[in-house]
Image (cartoon, rainbow, N blue to C red; front, side, top):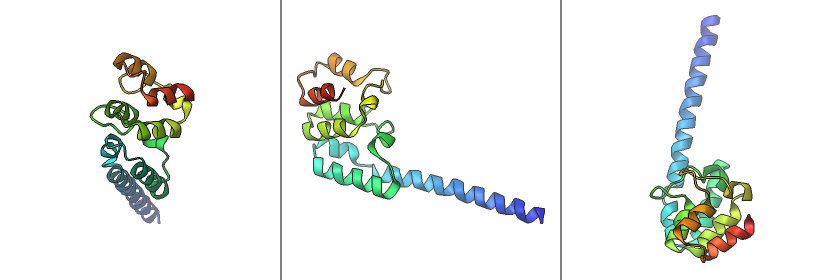
Length: 132
């Protein structure tokens, strides 16, 4: 009896571990071209992508924002450098204001990075300042 219980637990644990790996791979595949969408300033395609990820994986933008890197930059930074105004303002509006003030992977906040890059005149920067 004890042997059957142990075997069942091992099988259940391995199945659970495998399903989490597949889930992560599926999310990565779903987000594969998000950088291209941001750089192209394709707002409608970004909305579709965000809706698909939310419906398929129950994830909102704030859940995967920090995990997505476009050439070492976050999605909003990529929008700023690509002059993707529509997508950038959408991203700023969709992110919680608390998360917009947090330092990113390089330790700088969005506002500090914008000032450093001289992008204060960007409409995305204006939207960010309104949200914060």
